[in-house]
Amino acid sequence: MSEEKVETVRHMVDAWDRDDLDKAFAYLAPEVEFHTSRRFADEGVYRGRAGLERLLAEWREDLEGQRTSVSDVRVVGEDVVVVAALLTGRGRRSKAEFRERLWYVVRFRDGSVVRIETYLDSAHALEAAGVRE
Image (tube, rainbow, N blue to C red; front, top):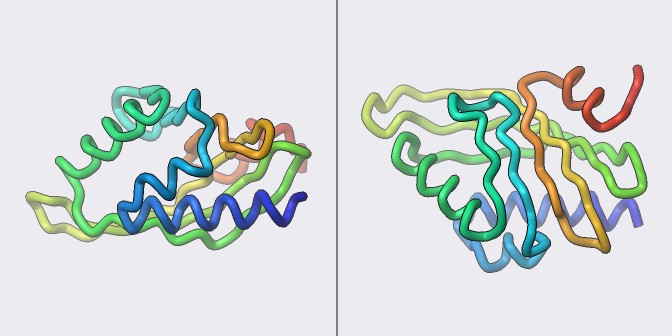
């Protein structure tokens, strides 16, 4: 079952990066929440498909060529995985390129993703996932 969650995360991110939202949403529960966890100025919580589509639209206003490369997916509980990823792209207006390491805590219920939390460092992500190292 844990391998299934790893594959779910990888397929979901791949679909998101290809702008195949229907495919990406096939892995998400209708009530999914995306928590920016102080990642963005508004510290927002985006709920459901409409919320995630709004988040994507906000990103597209400021960014282009954005890609998420998953480097590691670590199963840390029956329904929790921690994802290490590299976010790359460039500013839409400035054309300045960026590379940012991010960590996501992805929570599942009944095989679907119900919550995604974003962190700027692994220690906070692991702590949020309940891992003590």
